[in-house]
Length: 143
Length: 137
Image 1 (cartoon, rainbow over the protein chains, first blue to last red):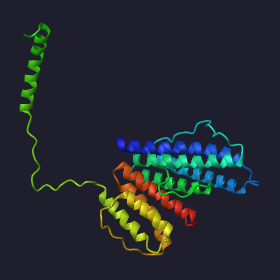
Image 2: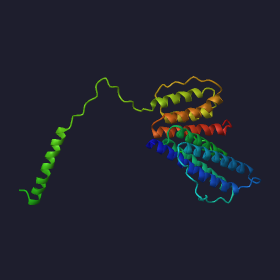
Image 3: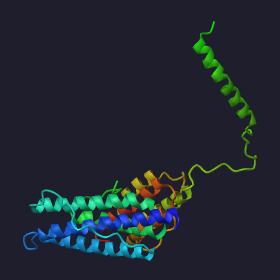
């Protein structure tokens, strides 16, 4: 395996680690959100959670196809602070998506070929999810 | 009159200097390129930039001003060669805006410069955001 290929796979593995974390945090945020009293936020969190699960599966499949064992999730992740209210949960979810977008953008140049294409596709989805959580469109998301 | 310490220092330095001179004389002089050699391009990714900007301009026809304004920002950041003309536009404006995400992603895949890759990938995400905000993606 060449060095470029290794760096590319490492970028995909790093993205996979981000998705593990995002799924954990979004699960915790969703568990603190009432679908009755905050239906819009509950829906946004559910959609984001489902999207991150799909991203995790796509990234894991890519790593497996490269003949490497996918990075495993940690047993526990730090939760964001101030998530005791709807506004706090919404803000935390938006920060998560902004961080995810920025991470994908930093990883994309390190990947090559189909790895890079996959990372940019997931970057675009993360950027789009920001709007569901109250963000305004930007010319260059993730920067 | 030299002190003892200075005299010793000169004695030590002198052979080194002589050695350096003789080494430089042994090096081959730098050869100038033959006159037929074309100049190196200023930016090897310029063709990727220009082709992408042509596609962006082609997608603008009939598109709402929000997309056109976004594309102006993207084009300015990409810094294309002067005089790049729009690629031929086919299909509805919505389809062209959707296709632009794939165009920008493919360009990021072809680019070599990490900064350009970042720029193109982020521009694709910006395009995706606008599409999503309008319920088009």
